[in-house]
Length: 139
Image (cartoon, rainbow, N blue to C red; front, side, top):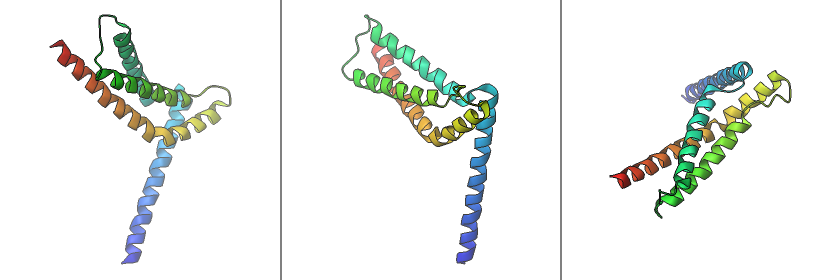
């Protein structure tokens, strides 16, 4: 019975290894051809739009932010800067061989994917809170 469980566990590890390898090759190919990943480009575009929106809130003199909203906006700005920093690190810089750079960045992307998804979901939840709060103020 123990041997069966060991074989199932081994098969699961092999599948995970193959899946990780396939993702790495996919990222490598896309970085080599495009110079960036489509997923990262989409996340970056949404984050930039959020940053612009928050900047407009902070700069606009007609908008007086409540005490409850200011810490959320500050945290949102901090998280968006952190996310943009990670995404910038994952772009090839053309300082080395294109293949070496794409390989390096694809592996870094694999390692940072969880953190990127976490930051993205935290930003989305904060954005929802901010827009809901502002929507309630306008009514």
